[in-house]
Amino acid sequence: MPLFEDVKYYCASTLSQERSAHLALLFNANGASAASREDATHIITNEVEFEGSQTAGKAVAVVTVSLRISAPLILVSKSGFNQEYWVERSLVLGKIQP
Image 1 (cartoon, rainbow, N blue to C red):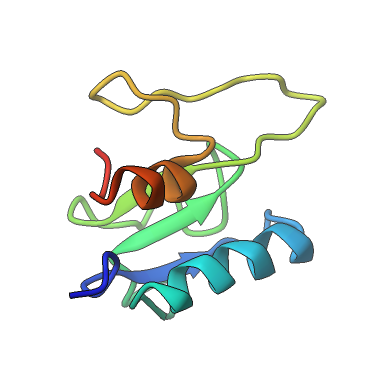
Image 2: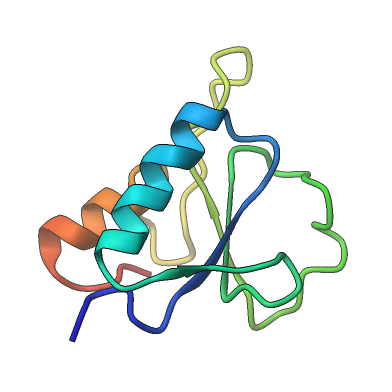
């Protein structure tokens, strides 16, 4: 079973095209599928506030990656892990990280 088989991801428009393409490549190669913001199980963003952040449901995981240099903030998930490399970390460890 591919690692991200149950993941439907949406890359927010705040991400650079290069970062979005890189994440899409990793997700797609490992079973995930792209989705609209409304249908996503995971929203990938580099901003705390992004288009649709107020309407994202509680069941949606918001993963903050690749934050801007002008805002050197590294968000940490509820479990205490740095989220910047959440996708890569999940792949290396072979398990979706919190």
